Structures are given as C-alpha cells and as structure tokens.
Image (cartoon, rainbow, N blue to C red):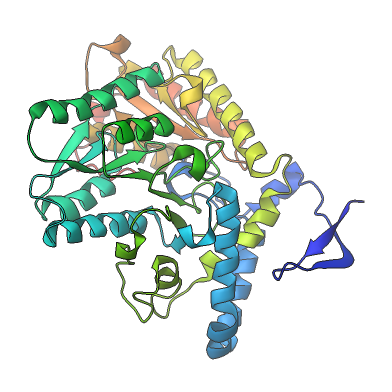
Length: 451
C-alpha cells in the first residue's frame, strides 16, 4: 500500500497520508471508455480525442456545483479552479510563470488571439503593407482560413513552405523552411517576415515537425515572432517544453490526447514578448487585465472542461510512467499496427518512425483508385457506414510516383484501442480490393473538412 503526503493548494503539507491510486488495469481502462460505441473500430482519436468516465463524472460535479448556486460558484470556485488548472499546465510544459499560460476553448481560439495581434499591427502602422506571415503548406485548414481573415485582409502577404510527403528525414523539412526564408531575403524588398506559424504535428498528412530547429532558423533570419500550432502535442509527443522549444506563442488542445472533455486548450505567451496586445477575441468585463484573466471569464458559459485538469492528472498518473509512459506506449503501438497494415497491403508508412507520434500515415493499396480529395472522403464515409471503421483518408497527388500510392490512412492509437480494431480495418480494405472495388464506384460528392 503506497502513501504520500498531501500538499494543499496553499503549499502546506498535511500530516495525514493520502492513498496513492492503484495502477490501472486493462479492465478498468475499458470501463473508463465503455461509453464508446463498441461496434466501431475507432482509429481517429486525433480528431476529437476521448474522455474517461471518471473525468466526465468530475465535470458533471463542477456543472452541478454551478447550477446549485451560480453566484457562490463564481465568487468562490471559478477563478481559483482555473488558476489551479493553469498551474498544472505550467508545470506540464515547463513555462517560466503561470501568467504565461491562458486557458481557451481550442487551438483555433489561440490562433485567433495571435493573428488578431498581427491585424492590429497592420492597422496601426507597426507592420507595413506587404509584410509577411510564413506558414507550412500542410498547416491545418482552419489556420489557413484564419490567416486569410486576419492577415491577408489587413494587407499582409502569406508565404507557404511546401514540404515533401512522404518524408524521409527531418533534414528535408529544415531545408525547405530555410530556403523559403532565404528566398524572401534574396527578393530584396522592404517587407519583413513578421510572424512564422509552425505546426508541431501536422494534421493531414500527420508529420512531427522539428519545431526547435525551425524556431532557431526564424531567430537567425530575424523573423519577429514565432507561433507554434501544436493542436495534437500534449499527450501525443514527448517532451513538450516551452524553454527548449523557444517559441513566442504555443498552443495545444487538451481534449485531443490529454483526456479532457471537449473543448479546452492552452496558449502559452512568452513573458518577454509584448503580451499587452494579446486579447481574447470575445471581449468581456476582464478586458485589459491580461490574457489569462480575460480568458478565464468571457461571459456566462460552461467552464467545467477547464476545471477538470487536476482530475485528468489523477487519471494519467494511474498509468505506468504517467503521461510520458502513455505517449511512449501509444507511439510504439501505432508504429506496430502501421507496420502490420503496410505489410498486409504491400505499401509503406509515410514517415520514419521518429517523425510519427501517436498517429502514423499508412499507405493504402493503389487498387482502391484514390484519385482526389473527394475519393478520399467518399472512401472514409464508406468505411464508416459499411464496415464501422472510423479513419481519416488523405489523398496525395502524384499518380505514377512512389509506387502508385496516392492514398494514406491516418491511424491513431490511444489507450482504449485494441489490436482487433486494426485487424478490422485491414480486413475491410482487403475485402474491398479483392472484390475489385475502386473509389470510382462511389457517387461523386463534395469533400468535407478533415479534422
């Protein structure tokens, strides 16, 4: 029986020992996620994440506490609870100070906060027309739209760094990124690169980006500020360390890979940057009191997802090695499942193992005839509706190249997954191929967004 001293929020240590939670068992893991549809092979944790029953129960307690006496909740629990969550996040990502951490709904909100600052800089004359924002070609679709809405309309220009896929090494990404910034310098114009938006893990195709090295290149090339969009990072990739990465802004969702309910994310803003210009896009009574305080109250709404972070920490600490142990096991398992699938289909993975996190891109048989984004979306829908397999499909243009592989599946692995989920996917694809199916057999429709 294991005990430890109980440390209270005020820093005092209780003499009464608190029983450490027992290590979680496989049966308990399945029980925590028993609300999932048991008939579906859920290989897309990267899109919406997951939340265990114990955390959902804690969330419900917070909701009821508010509903019982809203005024008492607001004046006595809300601010303290959010500060507690911010403090945990600060330690988790090795920020210098808790004031550098703000909690928001999702990474899209964090993106709006950073880009809103750039918009004001254009309007107020601190940035000049034609100054640039650089982003990766594989940036998330909503981030591209946000840059269009906030930067392009304000007079800025956008530089897209085209990256290869499949990718064989980090050097390919570093080379293309450096080349894009050097090209701006060679153009000899008076415009400056004011902001770099860099993914830590791209969504589709999923690739772990060497962000630390790209941040260093930005510093060398005098890019004003660096924003890392790391929507998938927390709970998915090892060592998310603000001091080591060195970006000015960094955001990650907590509901994708960190077991929080939807939706909650954090944004880190380095204290040495001019954070006085950072504001939540929803303006309420706390405007002007700093981003963290502004974000903690944007009007009457459900804040429970932001308050359960301590309960999530209790959950992950039941696993061997805590969240770092979960990340390693998920990575090892998704690679193993990916290798099993490409062996069965005679294809290949889209990245080296070390450039995958808890997701990996798996080449699909060329016989499926994936020739467009529309084909990819139709196949995804077909697998969901007829085989109960949920997995995103990526179309990679380039017929005749790369052994004919034009379609990749992005498979995820989270603690609730079983090997049978991946066998179900393998067998579904094998059945389609052996039956002579191609995507041309599916009716044409407009492709939706990939999450």
